[in-house]
Length: 221
View (cartoon, rainbow, N blue to C red):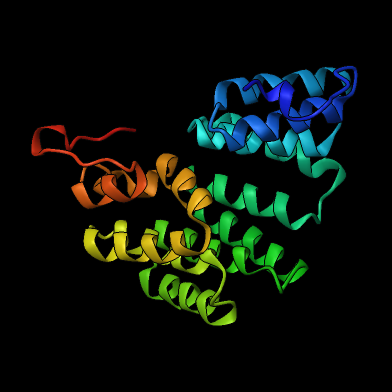
């Protein structure tokens, strides 16, 4: 089925291209999704949602410098949008600009204190900065705040993966996937935090839905 068959869209509209980009992202068609957001921006070069969508796709493609530029442009018109701030913070952390990243995720949390995902992502950012004790506190805070949200468990899985604790990481990913299987597996497939355990049999069974032999257990990123 083509994306166009899922929804009637007017492709003279920037928003229509943005919707297509979002759908393609959901199907993990990242290159095609990027094209859609670029088409949206040809129509409306200042649309913050399209710049944010482009940022998210570039993160999935691990094109972090370009993602940072897209993030800057998304925030020009919506400087307090917590989702935009969250994406910028994550991008900066992947570029190892940890102090700025933490400052921005704190701003996102202050702007929307009920958003548990920002708290969970603060845990991920702190773990990337190797501030593991502080990171664990944020992960547990997210789980306690909203135990039915996958974010805290996913962040804690990242925390374990970054320290090479494969079994514990996979157990937490499994917990997160029991809440939102499709989203968790999609995110884990491109998240560099899991690169050190990506070839492990347990990880591949959970995230790629496949059984692997020892010879197949290699990095798929």
